Amino acid sequence: MSLQSLRLHAIKKTYNQADKINTIFSNVSFLFQKGTSYAITGSSGAGKSTLLHILAGLDYPTSGTVYFNDEDYTKLALAQKEYYSNHFFGFMFQNPYLINELTVLENVMVKGLITGMAYKECVRFAYTLLEEIGIEDKAHNLPATLSGGQQQRVALARALLGKPDFLCADEPTGNLDKTTGLQIFKLLKYYQEQWGMGIIMSTHDQTVFEQMDVILKLEDCSLKVERNFCLTRQQE
Image 1 (spheres, rainbow, N blue to C red):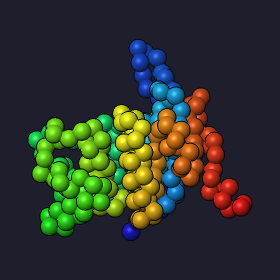
Image 2 (cartoon, helix red, strand yellow):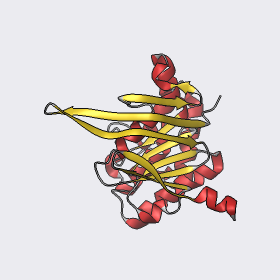
Image 3 (tube, helix red, strand yellow):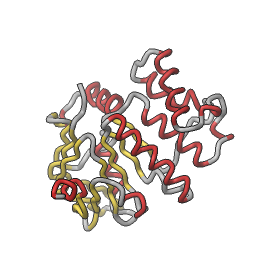
C-alpha cells in the first residue's frame, strides 16, 4: 500500500485568542500528488506551518476534509491515523529538534523503531542515509558536536527513514546559510527523483521555490497557484 495523493477539500482553520476568533485560512481545496514537488510561499503568520501539519495528519482542520488517497483522515480510527502519519510521511521542521542524549545514528533510527522496523534493517538503512548525505563519520557523535547544517542533515535522514511517500518540510533551509541551504535542498530533490516521493515545502527562499514543480501562495486566508511548471512542461 502507498499514499498516492493528499486532497484538501474546503479546509478552514481558526483559533481563539482573547475571546476573538481568528481565521488562518478558509475554503482551501487542493490536490497534492506523489512524485511532485510543491512550494508553499506566503508571509510569516499566513499559516504555512499549520497547513503542513494538517497535511501530515499532525493537526486537524476546524472544518473541511483531508483525504489520504480516498479516505477521510478525520474519520479514521486513532490507530489508522498513526499508521498513516508514521509510515507514509516524513516531516522536517525549521529547527532539527534532535534528541540531545542520543547519537546521530540513534536519532535517525527513532522513527523506524517506532514503526516496527526490524532493528538490523533500521541500523542498515540509517547508516546508508548518513553515508549518502555525507555525515556517516558523525554516526556515533552527539548532536551538540555538530554544526547547524550537519544537524539539519541528520533531521533529513530521520525524516527519510522508511522512504515516505510524502515529505513535508517546514522552512528546512530557513536557519542555514545559502550554500548549506542549497545542499539540503539538492538532497531533498535527489531523494524525490530516486523514490518518486512527493515534497511539500514551505519556504521564503526564491532560489529554492523556483526549482519546485508547483508554486503555491498562502495569502488572504486562501491557497492560490502561482506557477505550475508541470503544465508548462506538458505544453512544451
